[in-house]
Length: 81
Image (cartoon, rainbow, N blue to C red):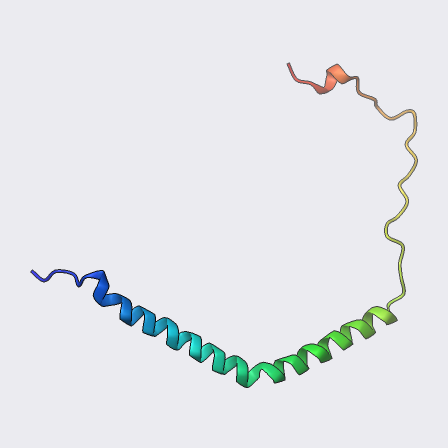
């Protein structure tokens, strides 16, 4: 039977994988960062223009006045025994 490799033998490979993943991420961000910044800026400007052109509407419709004929509850009716 073959035993498992000790954890000490595995950590260099994991560390190398994490370092290489981080380096690849850094390179990808450095390569596409300015392009993404430009696209985000254009999108923000379009959103601001749309918000400026939309007329302001009232927040909500006024609630109808309650009539005195509505059923009222007594406090003891709201509590279940």
